[in-house]
Structure formats: structure tokens, C-alpha cells
Length: 225
Image 1: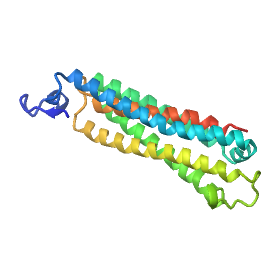
Image 2 (image 1 turned 120 degrees about the horizontal axis):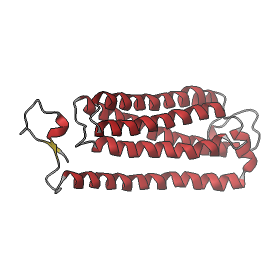
Image 3 (image 1 turned 30 degrees about the horizontal axis):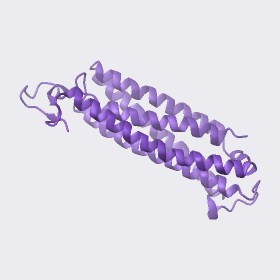
């Protein structure tokens, strides 16, 4: 773990006083180790969502009418809006990394905060405009399903796949927002700059994966019909 050196005085920016952990030979070696660790973690995340995609493929092959009927109840406009929000947030996340590399402290904080705002907006749209109305209408997963006019007897399976896949993705969005806010707080203390931006870099990798997963979920769930 990186440590903060006090040799250069308190007026020196914090990012200039951060040194690599004692078990690394250099700051670059520590940076590479952190990125490799994050890539390994992201690999496990891909395996997790791969299970959802496999379940989707199997059940859609078995019950195509149920999937088409269930997808008809999704509003592609809200899905498109959320897709645009996540794409914009990935752009501002990448900008925050570049801002740190150029020591643009104001824009580092601005872009991190804007990225977190986009994640929160995504969650609000998901809960208030998608999950809430559908749940109240009885469009629920599995045994909880009690919508009066299903288009196919197996439609509860569709809703199970929908809620599990999008709910797990939404959980990842909320975790990402929490991490970004922590990074933002550290940025307000001046912890990130040209010599030290590891935290922003690996957070950006996670956020880009969250965005990428949604790019696959959106057409598979919303654009069937």
C-alpha cells in the first residue's frame, strides 16, 4: 500500500509526497501490480455475468414467445436514456484520469463527481421508472408474478432473468458510485496527480466494465420485439 512521505514538507501537494509501498521496487511496479489485480478481479466479474447470459440464451431458446412478450413491457426509451447516461459517465471517468495526469485538479474532482451523479441518475431511473411501476403491476419474478394478462404461461421466467440480470448490474453501479465518491473525497485532499493516479485508474477500469455489461444487456432485454 502506498505511503505518504513527510520529507518534502506539508506545503508540497499530497500526490507528490506519496511513495510506493516497501515491498515494491518502484512506483511503476506498484501501479502495474494494482492494474493486474484489478484485471483479475474484472475477469471474475465477467464470469459472473457470463452465467446470466448463458441462462438467457437457454431460456430464450426454450420460451421465445415468453421472452418476446415480456420484452414488450419494457420501454426502450428509458433503456436508451440509461445507456446514454452510462456512456457519458464512462467518458467523464476517462477524462478524470487524464485530468490527474495533467494535474488539472479542479477537473479531476468535477469529472469524478459528474460520473457519480450519472450513476445515481441511472439508479433513480431504474428504480422509479422501471422497477417500481412493473412491480406494482404484478410483473414480478417467479412465484411472485401475478400480472393478470400474461402473453405466455412462462413469462415469469422472463421476469426472473430480467430482474436478476439488471438487479445484479444495478448493484455493481451502486458499488461503483460509492467507490467513485471515496476517490472524489481523496481527490479533494490532493492525493491524485501526474505521479500518482492509481486509484482513479483502477476505478475507471471497473466503471468501464459496468458500462460494457449494460451495452450487452440493453439490446438483449429491451430490443427483442
